[in-house]
Length: 121
Image (cartoon, rainbow, N blue to C red; front, side, top):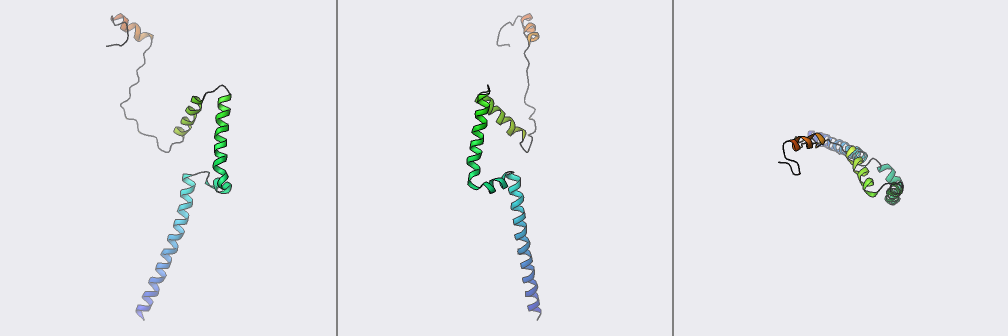
């Protein structure tokens, strides 16, 4: 009798764990799809037409950008700017970058020292 009730309890516990695991996996897959692909519901509704429409939209945008006095280099730069703007993590600065500004004052200073040309010592 005790063995039967233990088996029933274990069976009930196992079924509950399986149901909760199934519910969690379903929930997590929806969360993961929504996080990684914000347009996944649109892609699901459009089915196989989504990617050709996406390509046509990208080509149309590049054509519009190119026909309005822009070049493909500026289109590439604007795409890169959008990618950098929407990145999830901002990298920490390394501290090894130095910005050197060479202006007229600097050139006059080195000409006064007798080092008039390029490269400077």
